[in-house]
Length: 216
Image 1 (cartoon, rainbow, N blue to C red):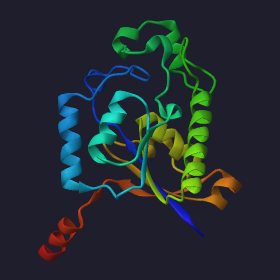
Image 2 (image 1 turned 60 degrees about the vertical axis):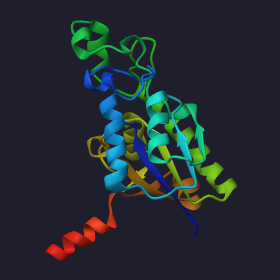
Image 3 (image 1 turned 135 degrees about the vertical axis):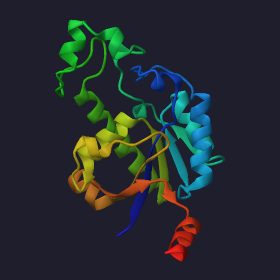
Image 4 (image 1 turned 90 degrees about the horizontal axis):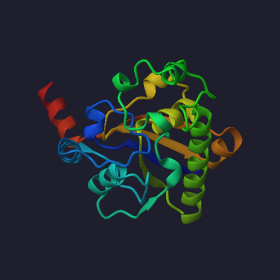
């Protein structure tokens, strides 16, 4: 049965990330350190080649995609944008401390959105719709390998809600420029709305692995 491999990759670091701000739909670029780190990951590790790249339309994701998959056929998909934090956008937990609305939001729950923002249920539904579009597009185009450059929260929701084996959200976190490789088959997706989690990305270069084996 034909399978479709997808690399789910988190964007590089921004100044707002370093400052601990909620930057869901706030459109900030990679920081200088973030750009450097992504280039270093590209040079020192291995991202499998892909036939197409789907990216969040936000700058930090588009920049990351341009560095990791320079020259690849790339399209923006608005459904891949990070959660809209509403009134909490671009603010730090310290700035929000003492706000009753913030305390309520921290209680969690699928239907407990920040003021003027998205609920967790809204984001999960959006993740499913995005995956459905990507998988259908790959099948139509005849592509079997693609990358999805998006946000940490989106990747965590995709893996914890639709990935097999089932993982708790905490195990689905990934660092900047890193992520997971998954395998999708039409039958599994159409029957169960699920995909197989293959492993972490990026991979160590084979040359480095061979060197390590020679030293053992």
